[in-house]
Amino acid sequence: MDVDFDKETGIGPTDPKGKLTTEEKALLRDIQGNILKSHGRDHSRHLFIKFDATKAQEARAWLAELSKTKVTSALKQWDDSRARAEIFEKSKKAEDPEAYLDVELSKKPSGIFVNVMLSAKGYDTLGLSGKKPTDTTFGGGAAGAVSRLADPPRKDWETPFKEDLHALVVIADDDPGKVAAEAKAIADSLKSGKVVNTEVGRALRRGKNGPVHEHFGFVDGVSDPLFFAKDIPKNSKQWNPGAPLKLALVKDPGGHSKTGYGTFLVYRKLEQNVDQFNMDRHELAKALAKEDNRTEPNHADRELAGAYLVGRFPDGFPVSENATPDGADKDIPNNFNFSADTGGLKCPFQSHIRKTNPRGDTTKLGGTLKEERTHRISRRAISYEKKGKVGLLFLCVQGNIQNQFEFMQSAWVNAPEFVQSKPPTGLDPVVGQGKPVAQQWPAKYGSDKKVTLSLKQSVHMKGGEYFFMPSMGFLKGLAKTG
Image (cartoon, rainbow, N blue to C red; front, side, top):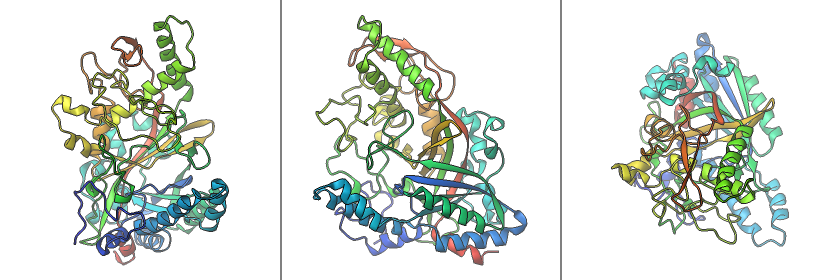
């Protein structure tokens, strides 16, 4: 039986210990990892490559060899993930779970993870234009999207991103030393081009094995679409995080007729101005305190102000939901929508999570939840710190850049009148770009009384590119191309 690319209930067994079908194995063997599920490693290096057009055949052979010896398939990732999950499950019964994890994970490390992808210019430079995805948005690259996304002009990007980039190799592991060594080995093996930029990522965690957060201090990546049946919670009545394969996978023109699929990857280096974010948060907290006849904000004001901006408290608990004694110390809640907060009195319409994942808000504008869900993206981001600057190396995968990332950024995040026009909602206070609009915020939690405040942009795009992550079969066959 063929794999169903349309169902939202996930592929693979619902039982974490179950088996994949023959067809599912064939598909996962031919697609790269980090598409249907994040690789989960805490350290990474991103090698941006520019090939020498006069050595295209040698470059293709290099990519083929890389795919045969280094690149991680989705099937390999599945096997590694199962082994790791078993260790974590057994740790729950151990006398000292953390000590058990330290010992067992050191015995059975998941291994270095490698992805490789090409830009539109990369396909052309390698003489592979006939096997390049025909998507026009991909063809125009990130530089072609500046006006659509209100990005800064390319001349203002960081220097490495001002020139054409042909390929991106991602190396990841929990051991930063292994990542650095592998990155050097891969770079040294490249004789048909050069690495023109390296970005170093490091995951920030709440606790040793806790959830990932970003530099503003908020848990990140909670509501990514889930593609495997075993990962989808059984009680997702308010919000189904399940997603069809077509949300992330698209046919690879140069791949196998049945199993050859890849994905489009958007890469954006986003610098975070933590001081500016905290100042905005403080100003909003002051406004909340003033409404309560206090001159200075207290801890509760600051926590609520941050939750208004993001839509979740720092530990990931949704601001629109009723508190629990445990907070989000265990599973971070994601089974919710905004049906009980249609006026934005708890989670403001402009909150980051409501702008990027409206969870049904678009039905007020005549849309459908089914259509809204087609705009979701799968984030694969990681934080960075370099020369005193901090931010996010934002990566996301999708089957259609225009309908997913670009739609989300232009029609939701940057749109002052989404989801409400009178008064206008304004920009997403975290990643919105464009002319700031004075925004209204609940003066008291759950109250329809408002305070008005204008915020400054605290996240700045420093450069990026659009890539296609080809199938394993396409990459391995490159040695014979030409």
